[in-house]
Length: 152
Image (cartoon, rainbow, N blue to C red; front, top):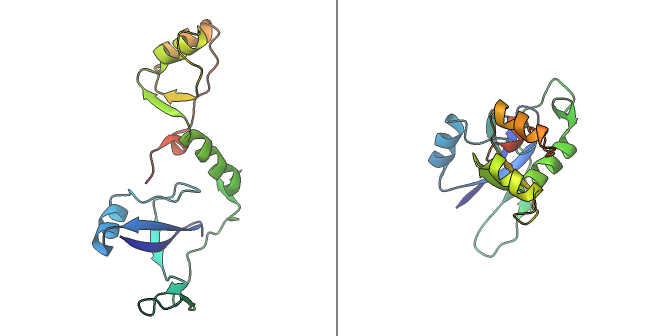
């Protein structure tokens, strides 16, 4: 495994683990590498601040040789005017839900009518299914795709 320091066009820095440099290039070209803060698919490798000099030698700091991409907008506002920290926390909350997929209406009903244990779920429902759930008094909220897209 190779750990690369990465940055998106919004200037958010994060790391990614890849089998090789070619693996990173292939995934980045296919828009599979995305910023965990703003979901930007324009991700580039940036110089690492830590360089391993040799086996058993401590890590040392080096100066980056290329600038980190920065945004023209304020980096604190990531997507839809949400602060980056809030967006990251929302994604953490969603990661801790069970994705029931197309079974969402059925599972939501089971939970509502106490036929299944209460738990946080997410999934898909058609407009008709959503309307039927709302008519039954079952609380749910639609989630924007950028929050639910599966990442790494």
